[in-house]
Image (tube, rainbow, N blue to C red):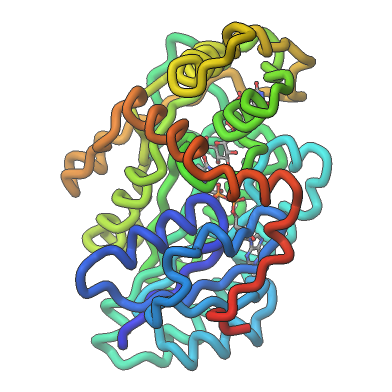
Length: 354
Ligand code: NAD
Ligand code: DAU
């Protein structure tokens, strides 16, 4: 069986990608390489627990010997690289972890993949792809009247997280330019949807609202983010992997700029409708708190290259995606409970290869 190797496939976007990938007809098998940090959750992969096409390996991308052994055993036709430390607030508290995984880890992965790729047969070498999943945050912060980020926007990362992702983008680009490795880079806007760890805005607000806890809005709450439903991001990655041009970068976004406070209020209103309380609106839990240091004011993504070249556009509107997301969290209280209690870290599925 032909395989792709996915890094970080027990995380939020990676797990959604693996689940969506294996729902396709004639999908290649997936070798899922994940260190299982606090953000990695095997329970998100329960739906493929008995699927022989899914092989899980608890492996750090910094462990070149282990990654090389997996490449040799499974001979993947592509690598899709999600693994990263991904939360801006954590990067402010512990930037070293971000340098280690996002910069050193990506470099080590590139080294292993390059060694593997260089000895493939000519047709396999031509067909191979290394797709690096990155973020719009590498472009910095926009003023209210600025045009959205394009692929040509200047890199101006402002947080340790975005600086580490920018560094990894540059390494990936350099491996194409210097060694010819057929890479693709995606720079995506804020994702939301099922299986998101409740440290990120939307997941945190839903889970805190249901728990009766304060909903902490940083600063004045007027920062702007461009939101994309995770299934649309996964679909974009599949298109780019299949038909993107090696060496190119593609911006991925939802054309959905929203003010944070409006997002939080919309979530409260959806919960009022879907899980009403007798004590009044969830909006009463909104609490303004100190701002994030160095908080980027606005992100917005121009995804027209992806639409023009590959015909991709998001299937969900913000309204439909947000409703699906709230419904998912309401319908999956066990997943939420395990994540909030930390129990998910003790879960070991019998099906997984260590
Ligand atoms: P996440 O934090 O939910 O998941 C990251 C996954 O990577 C986890 O399963 C974790 O265990 C794994 N991991 C971390 N360090 C590792 C290591 N050293 N070796 C192997 N596995 C490791 O992140 P996410 O939100 O799913 O983001 C996935 C990717 O997409 C990241 O590269 C991120 O920068 C990028 N991205 C995220 C968003 C977003 O809104 N979440 C938007 C654009 C781009
Ligand atoms: O833009 C893409 C990026 O989006 C990804 O690369 C990152 O991995 C992902 O974490 C995300 O970064 P943000 O910092 O934009 O996401 P976060 O969900 O942490 O915050 C979204 C906005 O909401 C931001 O302006 C901070 C604010 N916020 C966040 C939290 C968690 C709050 O006001 N309160 C909160 O409790």
